[in-house]
Length: 91
Image (cartoon, rainbow, N blue to C red; front, top):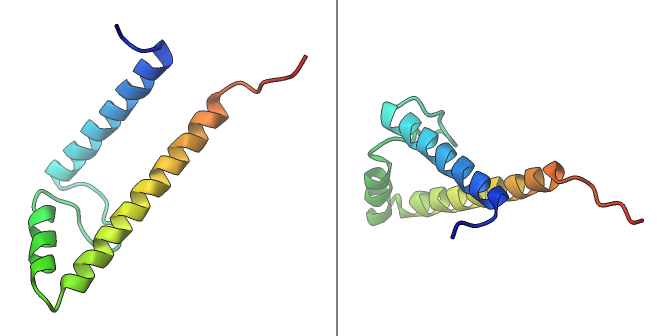
């Protein structure tokens, strides 16, 4: 059985957003983040940076920034969901 309708809509929205993001990366039209261009070869580039002692620190910083950015997006999403809910007024 499927979850509550609101959960289904939320999951569908997240799936659509992910598909759009992946398409932008694949097309090469995603906006740069912290001076880095997202692209199909991003993981390869990150790996190359991580395995070279001179640039390993940069790779770790970049990975940290991506993680922080993801948490920021999750927090923004939670806040938007809270703002969409009707206020509960005590009787």
